[in-house]
Amino acid sequence: MANKFSTIISKVNKTPRFIRSFLLTKLFSSKVKFAGTTGIVIKEITPQKTKLCLANKKAVQNHIGGIHAIAAAVLAESATGIVFGMNVPDSKLPLLKSMQVNYQRRMQGGLTAVSRLSDEQIALISQEEKGSIFVPVTIEDESGQAPIECQMEWAWVSKKRTK
Image (cartoon, rainbow, N blue to C red; front, side):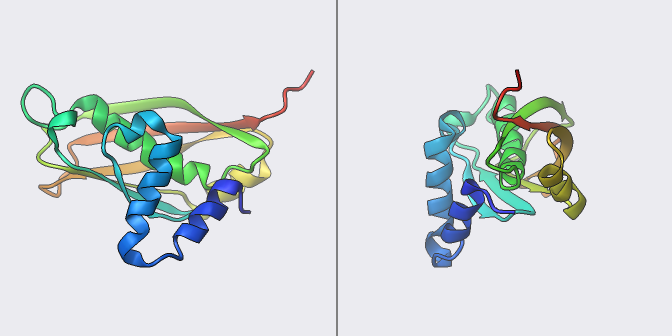
């Protein structure tokens, strides 16, 4: 089931590959202003999967030269929120319900986040009036390891308030 967001993304995904990431990133940054300040780059968006990257640049670095913990959390929230938002009907409001971020070790270089939804999760979002699901995300640094583990719970509710 397409929503306005997924319809726009579908059109962008039909553009030439060399400009697609730029357009996806610009669209995202124009709608989610705070996340746009981090320099997140969107590599891929489909209804089932997102892939986002965050370079280790001065603007997002901590006191030891790695990506700041909160910038990494914003990357995880963005990756899960985008794939979730691709599947929430226009009549529903997507909301981040909870996030758990466990830092396992120091981050090395840039980060890549990949988030996926199963067919069962997508069906649940489209069929239930309201609910919540845990949206998985994997974040790897340039060493190929996962320096943080994240769990994001996203909810959906009706946009119209019941009286």
